Amino acid sequence: MKTRFTGIIFDVDGTLTFTNQLIFDSFNHITNKYLNKTFSDDEIIQLFGPTEDVILKQLCKNEYDNARRDYYKYYKDNHSIAQLYNGIKDLIVDIHSIGIKLSIFTGKGRTSALITLDETDLTKYFDLIISGDDVKKHKPDPEGIIRFIQMYNLKPQNVLMIGDAPSDIIAANNAGVEIASVVWDSYAEDEVKKLNSKNVFHSVDELRNFIFK
Image 1 (cartoon, rainbow, N blue to C red):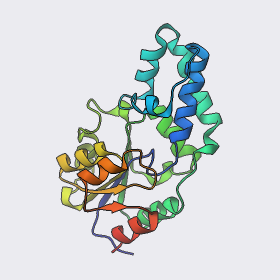
Image 2 (image 1 turned 90 degrees about the vertical axis):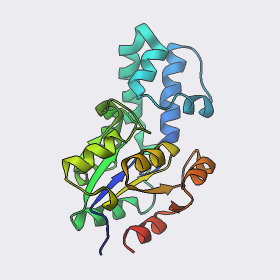
Image 3 (image 1 turned 60 degrees about the horizontal axis):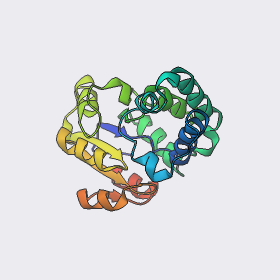
Image 4 (image 1 turned 135 degrees about the vertical axis):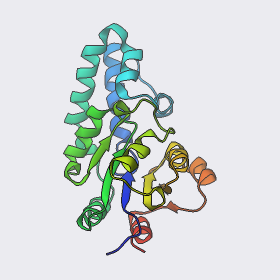
């Protein structure tokens, strides 16, 4: 197997794992317990951007410490509903096996990102993990991509960002790297296709063929 890329960056939610339902359930577990209310999926999506810790602090205020503990316990205990997409682990293993540098760049907080990567047995394949807690500016700012490029002295034109959201596209464009938009579980498929009409993939097999073509 060969690829023209020397570095590949993956988003997590909606790209590696079907975690949306787990996230919705985890937030509603907390809001039901501490606020006596639940949110629709769309209402929770509107909260996305800051890390879970920031959202929980805004929602639960004085109960934040307890809410945070309960959120991550529920997230980990129920992680079995967040399955990897078919073929994604084999793709990562194959990329890793030929010496390509691999990174995570996710808006998730570090705690939940590591839970997901550990529970799916993916942590060991990534050279660098950059979460929403590790950057000063979140996506669509390209800070996480640029840090990966600089750390491993990579040429931007040989780096690929893989994600499911508009923010991944904007971040990749601003960093000068190539973008692969995956829409097998994107909650913003129409907007993604408007921003990226070139590299859009509906299955892991399609993405694999693009990487190794």
